[in-house]
Length: 357
Image 1 (cartoon, rainbow, N blue to C red):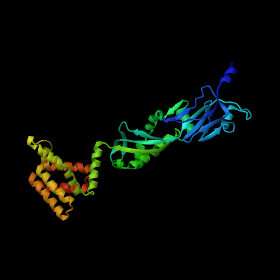
Image 2: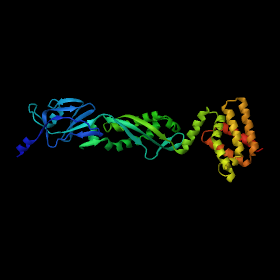
Image 3: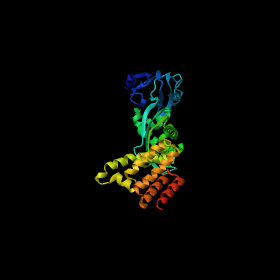
């Protein structure tokens, strides 16, 4: 009976794998009780590798090409099976194919804000996302560490683990890049490079090569985004504090106009805040004139116009001690955020205190 079962067995003489495009990384050739014929043909295509596993041990690894399976082409398997070189017989062994092509456009991203350390702001939280590409570089390591004896192992089975590896190294990438936190969003290429370098060792331990990492977006906390917006505004006027104040004035004018339109209903909202600073609608008109003169680069005449505008604002609003103190507090906030220097703050402070005399 055992002899009849042996005779009924089908000998396999062609071994190959045609990928179906379903994201398969590792595929076990279906033996189903069959035995491989001695001298059978093994075809490994480009972007593939094949591994023979005998009694739980990796026997041989084959790269792209066509092979005749004999004791000469599988010396390790021959040793494990204790073949006599003259004994040509079918053999039973597990055969796995691996796809070594790049797996593109795999996504990574923070589901929750990640806390990192920054030299300027201490502990800050950010969100980021992008994509990456990888491929199998060492099928022996991948088989023993990841895919094992499963019939099929796909990119979807691996995605969660790889995404976690990317996220746990974000803090390392930021630290190694040396990029200030406020400049991080504008230096995404360098950030991506550092993230790849920080993570590729973890990929190699799984038999994978991390080929490319991109950072598509970095989202800063709202309070730091406001500071970044102010920094961009400073850049628009060349870092000149006088022009920056004009820029701030231009940003405020639409709000003053909005409040003026609704002042008849009770004088609250934005207009009430403006009056608290001794400005009102008259200040909005004067600031508009000041902005126009400053941006036209009027030189000394522009400076004189700005001084006249400041005097007109004071006369129109009748600045009170409480208003001066409120303005000083706002200037102090600007100094604390690094927008005003100590010298600029002191000069403005002295100017305002003179109005109390």
